[in-house]
Length: 211
Image (tube, rainbow, N blue to C red; front, side, top):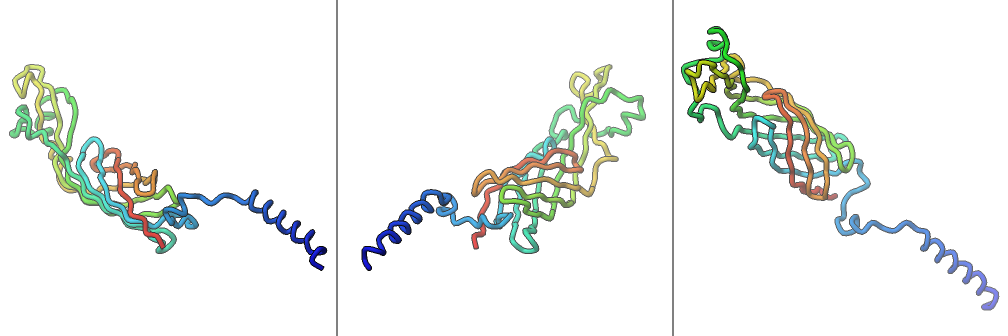
């Protein structure tokens, strides 16, 4: 009886070795990080730096994506301008853009705003590396226009800044974009905003919400 069982044992051992040889290897990062990769999105908290280029270079953001309602989340940020044309010596405080245009119109060179904004958006995780967001916010500030006076009576060598009263004040800002998760604890933010119009860029540190 013992001899008759040996061929079966040998076949069983050979089959087990064959299965082990062809079985897919376990991902080391999944074991080490204990990351919930079975979900199409990855629940996490995030905090980071954000900016609206070229108008607001200082900003902070925070967001959270959970498995609530299929990966929905919330995003908030606050952004600020770092400088204002009023700080320049060739700023003309007694003139406005409307007055310059009414007087005959010097050549317009550029424009710049000094804005402060607070925004809120809804988020949705689409995959383990991609999250989209869209929302609106409150923005307040002053818009400025730079002109050139051919007679060089204003500003510095004819170049001067004035306020644009029509574009200044309080506005609604619409924003949207994506977060690309490039590492377990790092995501890159790209998007756009309507007021002041620009491109959103940022980076966030992520805190995974492992289950």
